[in-house]
Length: 260
Image (cartoon, rainbow, N blue to C red):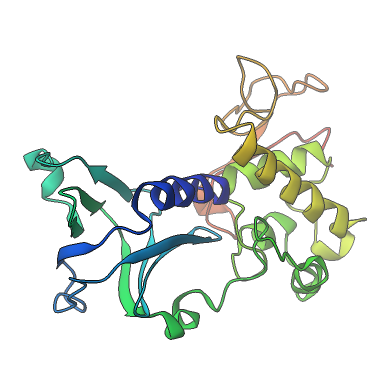
């Protein structure tokens, strides 16, 4: 699943490529929004919100999408078509007046709605770690709202704080020497933990698009995906729990010695 920094960079690329472009014809392949017609509208910009993407038009419409594991957006040059096997997964095509096509492929979440109603699709999200107006106090309050909850499950809950995915959350907890199973109430400085998470995502947007947390060519991560490999800090074997055995339903890696 794309993490917040990936969506932030994608929004910036799409914004740079298509902001100001006019939609000549639209094709929405979704049973609920198949009748939506965006022709004649100008794309004013792309806005990231956690792991969500919002493409806005000049007359108050928004295309909302979430990539999850399978989705992607492509800008096709004039005359360029999707390969047949890829075209089968096309969910929305915005044919631009300059001949290019904006193609949303394999999008598991897609909506076309008035911009004034964006709150219906992203209003549930917690403070966005990459947002310019990130409210650390509000994020901390949400993290502490369920004191007995495991901290990893809380960090992955986008209603608590938006932007962290499985990789960043687990690497963050390793760097902070916090067990993924520790209760939120037992995290000594949860505010510093959130601040570190924000710093990691912001650095990934600017300098670290490869999401390399170790600074090495190999391995790129401290614990994520490194079951039974030696911890780079203490040498103990990295532990692992499969998704079906975790309360948050995600594969989990941690160092049992460094993250007691």
